[in-house]
Image (cartoon, rainbow, N blue to C red; front, top):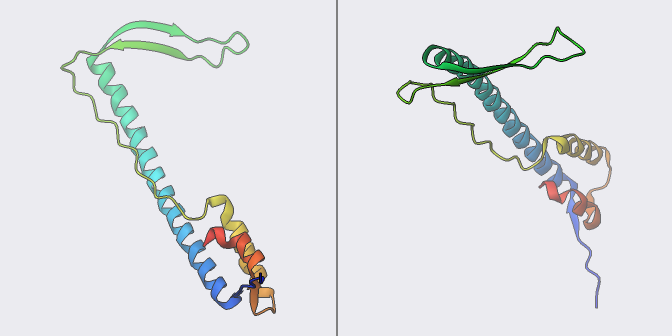
Length: 137
């Protein structure tokens, strides 16, 4: 039985990894943009819902959540009953986020791999080393 030796050209690996990092950064940036927009819409919805409930509803009960160690932090739980015919704003739907091929935490690791590959004077990467970072390709 013969051993099989596989070598992968560094010149081919670096552009593939760089493309994956660029694509992952783009996906993460788009997801962050969607998350910020959804958070802002949810905050507006919360304000509009509060105003609609106060306008249309009646107070059932009020409970003060006073803390014995700090009277500066006073919060209240207020229960409202809102009639069925009252018009309440629709909650914004949470966006569907695209899944990146490289997690946000792994991007720095892949960038370090690229830096090391650019510094090497070897023409090929052997299969055992290639296997360590092939999960990102």
